[in-house]
Image 1 (cartoon, rainbow, N blue to C red):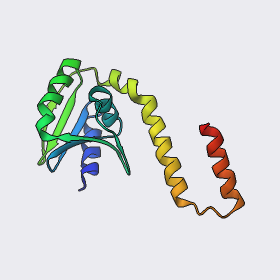
Image 2: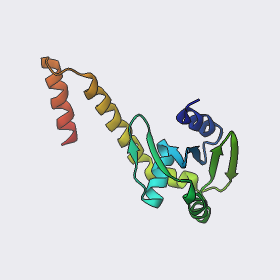
Image 3: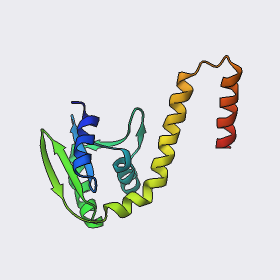
Length: 136
């Protein structure tokens, strides 16, 4: 099971928590959880196939302490084991980053569509013009 799939599995079980998955010497979180972590810690957001944030395992105690202080629930997944902390402010932070999350998904959709086109038809030109006008 790849780590994003593992994240999704645990996220379904813990929809009201930030879910972290250990990948090598880093913890990663994805999607809306990544945006929450990025907004709190100003970590760099990676947007490829997934939206994600990663940080070294040595930072996990700092992350946990700040999440505890903000009363944000979290779940840490490593070696098929899970550590959880139950607080109740997750939804409030999720709401703060919701618009950005939707924007990034639209951005990824546009990039995927652009990458799949060969621009040699008049219809392709219209699509590009429409996207350009929308983004202006």
